[in-house]
Length: 119
Image 1 (cartoon, rainbow, N blue to C red):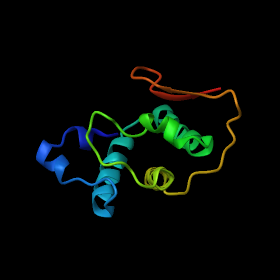
Image 2: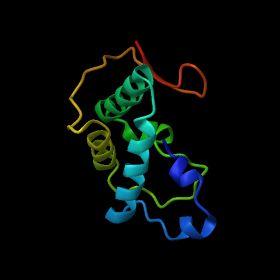
Image 3: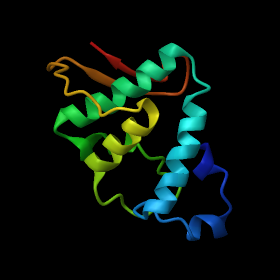
């Protein structure tokens, strides 16, 4: 969903501020357009990953699965707010509070599993 950022020129990236509302709105609109092309299982996995990260109590520990570190961005100042805002953009509603239990594993891999919250 970060194709928008990955396809930016260096000059465009220099002018992109992840904490700026207008920049983030453009990013989330592009992410929503990408998300809308996903199949139901991929959509479910992305949403479950966001729900898991929000409910984990360790957002910083899972942050590498959220924003591509290959793209030089400023640090997101409000990580929980970023994730809630992204989830709301993708679904039209706030993320539910879920208890995934202690035996959940977040798999962030390219391939048929994609982002998968495994029990």
